[in-house]
Length: 244
Image (cartoon, rainbow, N blue to C red):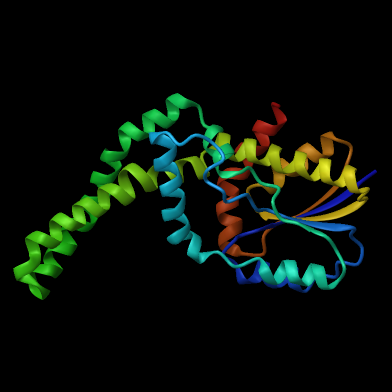
């Protein structure tokens, strides 16, 4: 019976990164790391997908900058002689297509209202500050700020963020990652593997592998913030996997 240890993490957590670096990998045949193909051009680019791709870049350049690099972890595993498989997640275009077309279109139509909300939250404080710092440029800077907000937080960022965190996408990505682990393990004869992934993916991957006859051990994130955030979503994801 194949065995897997699934270590959930909060991607921005220093504790989780250090926990992986302190681990002895000698009992495993291979390690798997959540990761995806970053090629945006594996499908035809229509208007909605173009917005999603741009939004994906914007998301990575904002919140994504808080993520801890996995390079040290991968190097640590390789130094111990283990193969590292770090592209088990859905590709960018696959993540996009996991959301039904009507939901993509609906969010596209609603995104300007989201942008307006964000704009309202920042416009007054910004106007107050600019009127005192650069009163002569207030009108021009306000117009530029409106355009920037509509582009980055309306038609682009909101669409990408929705597709990244929406429950159905998380569920489908869990299945994708678990299938990749099973296929790679069977092809290479792995009997014991370590899987490093986001904490929200841990229960879904574990459920799928158990259904495939694997002996699975789960370890949650070491981050307090990550544990609190995971509580909000894991119960819902577990119910969905139980209904599968």
